[in-house]
Length: 144
Length: 324
Image (tube, rainbow over all chains, first blue to last red; front, side, top):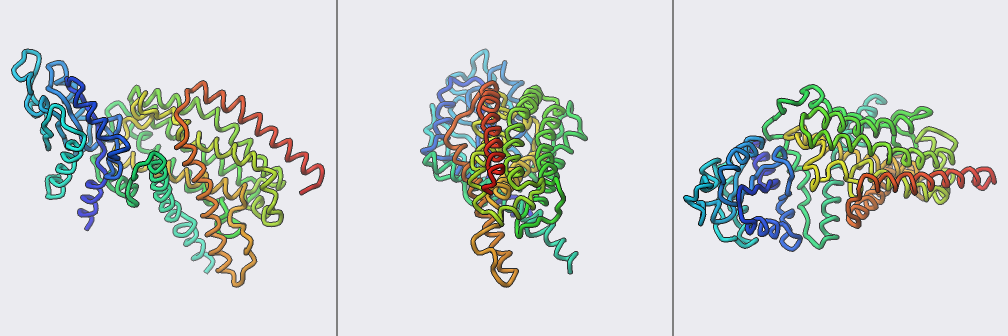
């Protein structure tokens, strides 16, 4: 009873934190476009938060550069459990065109565990919302 | 029976459960109307409850640099002070649960405690953003608190009493007296907006400048309590203004028989008047953008305080001429 209530509340109120670990800003602009009034993410309970302490979902973009590796790790550690990570864009999924470059560690999953990948260069805003909905379906099945 | 009624009053109806339920409803109304003004759909009805349960079930984090005792006590104290302030607001009849000469002043000071708790919580969270947000909280206290107190002096002068229930009793006798203090009503609503740190006065937690302000390090159940306390403060502040300026439970059919129907109608009118004040707060938030710290001090000291003093002069003149 209590568990299903907690699960319901988690599904209904995913607060997101947006983190750029070396992206070209293309995916970041698309994430902001997914939060505009026309698509209205707040009807799913999504709020954009400024601090990792408030967030449930870390939305990452870009390949992880060697400079950003420690910062990404720290921001992830600052989020309270349970937490989820969504990667937006080809570079974040695998490193993309930067895979193997000297200054780049690779995709986001080389540094922190990832729950959902949204490929594209950059993905459309509706694809990003679709990825978040798929993450919620995963949590509902028991991933959380 | 009397003690049973008192317990019901404290815990259920105009007491704790009612205020908390109304606080959740007020947050939903706030976000929904804000969304509709921006041509969005807005959150579903149970959204504030879902946020509260989710935050309460999250991991409990206290930063290493934070002072554990103050960090934990701040949200609890702010919620407790707000719930205590509501006991002096007349909801059902013209007399609140506890009445004494000067309870208006006590309620106003109790409503100041959440601001100080937020300052202490932000200051001792060990985060630079939290500390700069806390400094903004403390420095803005002086710009909205003075016009808020001055505006609430006007109906007290009008009724000749420092007790909220006394003011409501006076308004029962002279329902048109609210026309005289209508200027102070709007000053009080604007100052309440500053007290609640909402747009255009959300300078302390400006998320585009200092991430989360004093709440930057708060997470989990402490953040849930702080958010609930802020919503409850919105409800209690709006209820206080509705009682002192608009007569709280007063309505044209107040002399209904038997008594409990009159109580139900009175409570319904109190809720209606509170919703009117809440509506003003929400529409103001939707219509404006954030201002700077110095602009806020300007608004308070150049416009609100002189207008509040002029309003008091009007009240004194009206009393002197013997019109009310």
